[in-house]
Image (tube, rainbow, N blue to C red; front, side, top):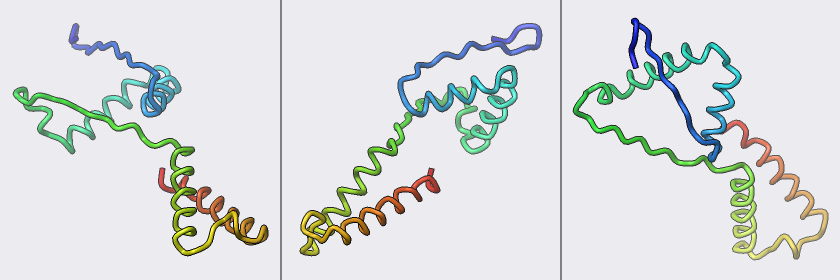
Length: 117
């Protein structure tokens, strides 16, 4: 709502997804500086999507929940296990030293996932 040449809005959303929690925590930390960040972020978005400024456009924004790190790690472990099984081996059937090496390699790979976030 615009009144006395000032825009006033109330923003509320649930803390029910990782992306909403991330956004909410960021806004919490910003304190009284939320407006500057929201204006900057929205203008950057509008620069990339000028169609949203057309009054006749129906805006529908869909968001997809990002995969949690635990889910991604489980998926990677399953893929590695599947590939080893297809190659004729199995982690359970390997000597303990080789299994430890493989586990260490997987842990190192999973540790590098932070780069992609």
